[in-house]
Structure formats: structure tokens, C-alpha cells
Image 1 (tube, rainbow, N blue to C red):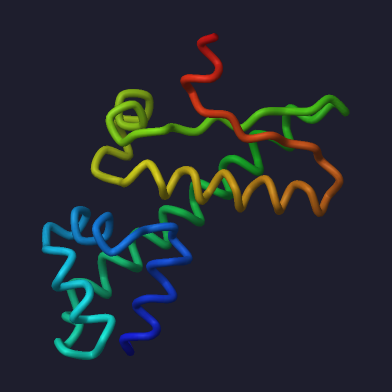
Image 2: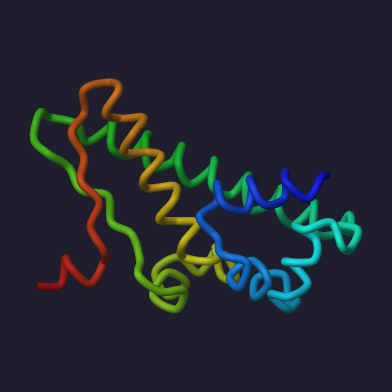
Length: 130
């Protein structure tokens, strides 16, 4: 993997260098060194990035499927999470996965559904409690 590819894939996941570093258990400065070609990108980082990407695809697909099943002409809402803890409380099967990955999946699902004429909004779980 090239430094530019790591940066592009990290950004496509919606992750900052700090967030990716936190997920991987390494310092932001190390991510920066990878992205600027000052350190070789370990295979373990590539593997973890692939897991994050796969999780995003899976979450996106699930949201699309669930929304299409509920479609009835009215505007539907995709609920997402503002922080990791709330995400993990509601979806313990995804513990450790950053909540931002769920938000990226929601945005991708909304865009995919829009191309099929399905109107969807994205709301935070905290918005639904009001």
C-alpha cells in the first residue's frame, strides 16, 4: 500500500489520523509518518483498514435493506450515533468499531437509496429522544 492510498482510504472511512491511530492503538504521529512515506506501512495496518472497509460495506448494505423493506413513500430516518459508547451500547456486536464508520455507512446508504428515489434523512440517536 502506498502512503497516498492509506490516506485516501482513511479519509473515505471518515477517519482522522487521530481516530485511525486510536482504533489501531498507535499514535497519530505514526499514522502521519505512514502517510508521508517516512515509515513502511505494516501488513497489520492494511489488514485492519480492510476490516474497517468491510464493516462499512456491511453496515451500508444492512441500512439499505432495512430502509427498502420499510419503504412506503414517507420520508424515513436512518439513526446513527454521535459517540462510540452510545454506538456500542446499542450494537454490542460492533464494539471497538468507531461510531464514525457507522455515520459514513449511513451517508452512503442515504445516497444509494436516493438514487432509487427513496427519501431518507440521517438523525443522531440523541435527536430521536427529544
